[in-house]
Length: 410
Image (cartoon, rainbow, N blue to C red; front, side):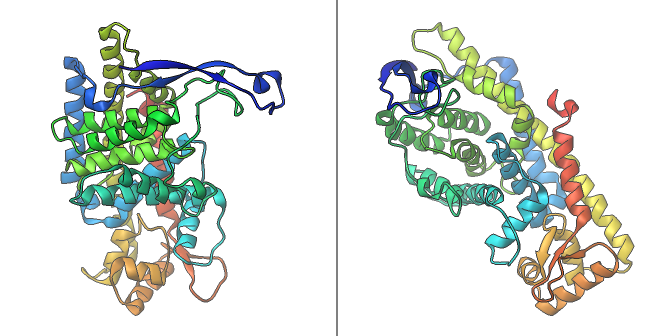
């Protein structure tokens, strides 16, 4: 029962232009609750979903290097959070992100506010995944916690975990919704719709991938927060996939694909919305288009993650060859396995991550410095920061490959 509701906007006279200062009628959209939504997938879309779920399962079960490396799994999560932020206009380089991560962990290193927002997105993804692994049911509180973690220590911290009490909109100008591309439900409808989304996250009768696609599209449609809706909505994708057991180890970098195919992504979300007086076939067609796009994005993300895993293994093999003898099970062996996903570190952070003694980790890092695999950042003598330039370059190649025309056509 997707419905449009007409309202009057009374201008407060703010804005630079007449269009920004005007009053007038606008319509906001209230979607059908997920609990009442009828989904009839066409055979080819069922095939798309099946192929994507098989690819996600294969990535989690068979990518041995990724499986054995928490560092690379962390890097894929980082890639997902970076790209999710990029869709919202927050674009930063790998080194800026890594520096912001280190600063948040207490290391004295220069960073910036935009990078801090992306780090917040990483923590929101981690919060969503942690919630998925708990035995408790997903609630509105779960979603609010993810949003709160996203906003923590950023310019939008005051909005963290707070459901909006004012009308928001997408597109147009910042003063009124009269020329907006989309106007979400009025605040009075948001609480019930958010509760419906949380309840649907606990459903186990729908295909995991279809469930994740519907949860994300519905959340974006409701737009329950003043800011951070897109990033929170994409974190919920991984909450659902992890909760349903489809991604027990690895997060496929879906947002990398969505960022590359931004127009198709927005079109899919738009197609998902329908009115109750439309031809039912039109409504089902829109849902099918969105689910098909979502499944295709999952498939591409898995293909590229597998390709990256192979590149990471080649890089690790090259490092081992450069070092010569590396004793199995040693701190150096552990460092080489993790460094692709931990390309900026201190001895202390590496020691904690590897669960090794500070002295053993320090010796391993020095060997990597001597071999030219790692280099110090800056000139500070105490609590030195190190980086693995080749690992950072490998991640940048991964991002560029996903943004290439060949990937976008898949």
